[in-house]
Amino acid sequence: MPVSFLSNKQCENYGHYTGAPSPHDLARYFHLDDPDHALIAQKRGKHNRLGFAVQLGTVRYLGTFLEDPLAVPVSVLQSLARQLRIEVGAVCWPTVWASNVGSIGRKSAASMAMCSDAK
Image (cartoon, rainbow, N blue to C red; front, top):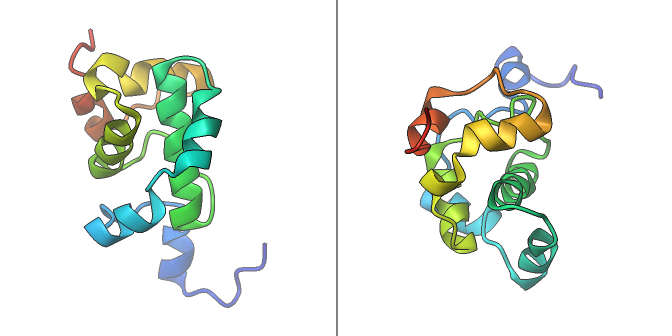
């Protein structure tokens, strides 16, 4: 992808959250409508449904998928989990979902804090 038109800062920030999305951005990019819920419902396990929803919202918000799927602001996890009626602590987000994407060794501190039953 050509990036010569981007500033150095824009290149560094591409494909990463640079902070938590605003409430307006959460409502705009991370709202799950009926077709989204139907697609997400096809995934097995709460961790897969939440992970899929995170990537769906992220690609809408950032325009790309995350290199590190665990580098997600807590507000995004909370918003999506609430819409999916998933208790984030019960999912143990980083441990279970990361094992399915092959990056179990990379856990962000913010994501670990969401996992109330991590051992």
